[in-house]
Length: 340
Image 1 (cartoon, rainbow, N blue to C red):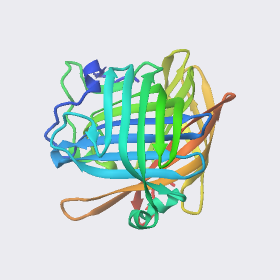
Image 2 (image 1 turned 135 degrees about the vertical axis):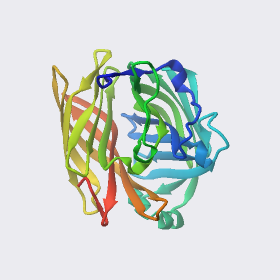
Image 3 (image 1 turned 60 degrees about the vertical axis):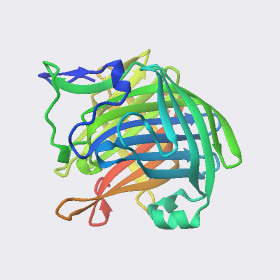
């Protein structure tokens, strides 16, 4: 990932830890991990987004079980500062920056036979049972780091419009993952692959009109992540990176074709992307999907709604079979997701 002309990219080991919050009320510091065990077909994604100036952290724990059930919990957990990634029963520990991190959780989650129930959260929590969930997973880096903070050439931070920002900095990494996940009376010893990211800076979920974020992990030597975004004016951009031969190569063009069910949830997709020297075609089949949402009111009372569909997806590329997510984010306008 290269910085735009006239700027540079900065990333230090200290960025693995929390930063001093900016003054913007919507300052967010987020860490995210996903893992999928290719043999047991179990996995999940885990996120803490500290919003210290608002006094809470967004905590999400989503586990896809092999039988199609999903265990899910979201909390807006009270926090007093931005000193740690530790909220709502979940904790992220940096064992060695850029090399080894640990995710742990001890709490409860909603167990849904039909994860589409989460389209109406209030009803989902009334009609599905809560079960104890415990896990501890060690993530170790396979790849170099990709991304960082774009800064001025003298190292000073950029001026951002907090109302239109999705973050000041962002980086990602392909990883191996080992540990355990226990849901109710079931337990899996996990050995798989995943992608993690970190970001910080002002964030509103409504800052991007729509995107398709597709993190994929195939094996120790091959992974891919591509993001395709769209604007209200119809402009579409695709980027990301390919992990191959021990290095990251930037994706310079990417596009997606997806099919949807009667609810507008993705069922399968085809992605074509290219680096400077190679082209890739990836097919994806969604194995299990949970729909989520974010709602916000502006100071003048305008209502915003964002839909985020999180699909555990089986990917195929160049003879490899891998797993990851298809995360489709859309603003909802007049009751319809705009990216469809």
